[in-house]
Length: 294
Image 1 (cartoon, rainbow, N blue to C red):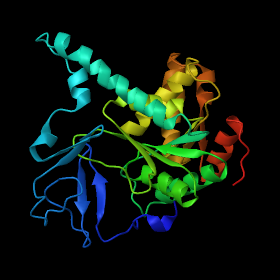
Image 2: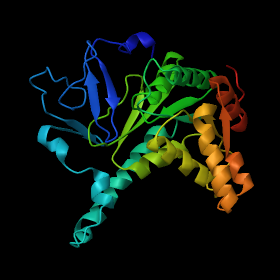
Image 3: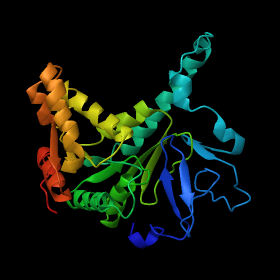
Image 4: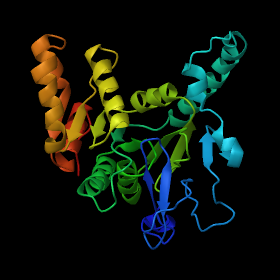
């Protein structure tokens, strides 16, 4: 798909920012924030004022329906009433369907790399530009690009992949308010459950490239490190872009975890720090057995 087929990243419909609670606050052409806190709807739109929109897998919820608990809430919150004996067995079928959908959709994807980073990365940020370059270079090296499908760094990597003519994948997740797939995702899957989504990130990728990010990024990063450390996945490079951003974390691992004996010296080799997209792609391509051509 050519870039001309996608809406402009700086269109006059405004931009969106992900808050800590997963909500999106939009900004219109003037740059003033929406006041209703809904996803993608401007406060000046009478039909949308005060109305949230959210996805639960393939289901789209609007208005009052968007306030129902998330699927992960209902699965993970303790239920002392004994109701789990009636609901959880049926919930297993829904979880199974997410794995079937993910496996069926991505089975023929081919070599791919998962790219992580903050949903809050601004489009004028140097890290956004770096995310675009990562996506482009990965495609030039023969990879599909997988992200969480959201805004920020995820959008940047999807954009770079799409503009380079590659396969741009987004794996979305149900959040308290609709985050939605970014406009550069060509193959998107929406999940209800985090653990089903995480499986797809690892199963169909040959490595991770990690841009600066927050809790969600750290969650994926440490899960990948644990899988490599325990031998659950092999030959799985993990590259962090932005030495100044990530070095304090690595120094804490070395100065505290290693010093206390909770990790080994070998575990420190699981992470590789770089400052450029070119270095990151060269490392993952070499580790995964694909020649870097970018």
